[in-house]
Amino acid sequence: MNVELLYHTENPERAIATAARLCYAPVGAAELMETMPDQTVQNVLKVIMTGGHFSTLEHASFTFAIDGVSRALTHQLVRHRLASYNQQSQRYVKFKDGNVPYVLPPSIAEDEEKTALFNDAMKATVDAYTKLVEAGIEAEDARYLLPNAAETKIVVTMNARELYHFFTVRCCNRAQWEIRELAWKMLELVRPLAPYVFMDAGPTCVRGGCEEGKMTCGEPYPKVVREQ
Image (cartoon, rainbow, N blue to C red; front, side):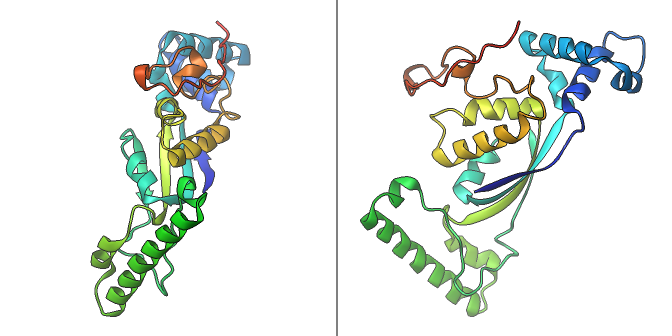
């Protein structure tokens, strides 16, 4: 898995604070953006994050390039609807010479016999796909054979509010291993850019209690205490 941050709102925390401060300021947003003291920015962010006024977080966005993940992951990822996606197309991209990269789950990789079974099944599938393409079948139809394990590439843009929610759901130990790994990698990339906003981002246990009820993993992450 490779995750890179392609683009983000310049000075995201200042942009968020500007949008929030505008509601109560006699001057325009452009002037606020330029002249608001850093301490004021911090004070506004404190009000936003401790008070739950998260609509202002939507004014900062982050764009990621994600490679080497499975279709199983992206099927889960695109369920986060308040985001923009562009994904490598299996309809237009032909996988030639039997070269269909795929993701092997760790639970299978740790056992030699299960790994062989998985790889054999993948080889049979890829061989059939290749023969169909070579026989003149369009990739858009041959792709019906390709499994959830097939690797893909995707560009994702989320605003800070949706990212905060995404980290809440997908950094949790109950999230599947692959999308959980992705979520933590994304959090590592954005936290230095908006350290106060993402200070306690992650599963609900980092902010206090687990909200999974009977489904809790029983292994909470250390709690982060946000300055009040």
